Image (cartoon, rainbow, N blue to C red; front, side, top):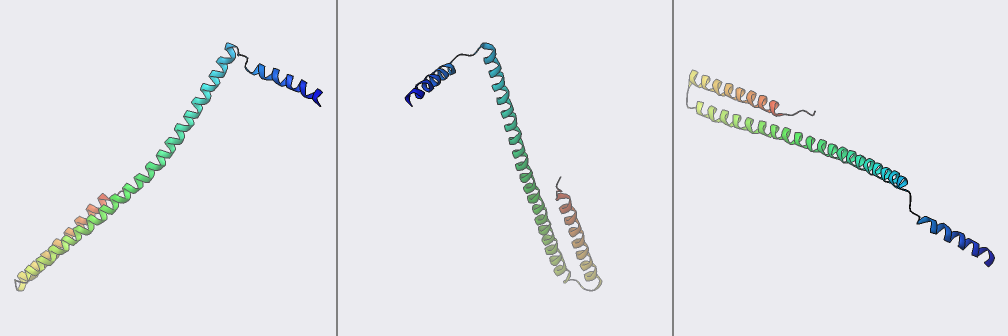
Length: 133
């Protein structure tokens, strides 16, 4: 058994000694070029993955911004309607101090003002609503 182990050790030692041999400048140049190309490819792929991730994140942020703006438009509409309704109620209460045709005209004007304010609020809200692109 020992007869076989010694030649195996000698061959292994020679093989390992050959591993530390320096390469020719051409081989080194080729290896460096390959390593640079591989590094450039990895950087390019990493940049593409990063850009893709950022694009997805931007889409999510953009969707949230649109949702926020649309919610703000709806709430602005609700506030405008509440103000218009409050103004109508005050005007109608004021109309009660009048009588006959004057009261009827006053109430008609209060209702017309309310309808105009409501229409203006709707136009403003629709203009503020953003669509997804």
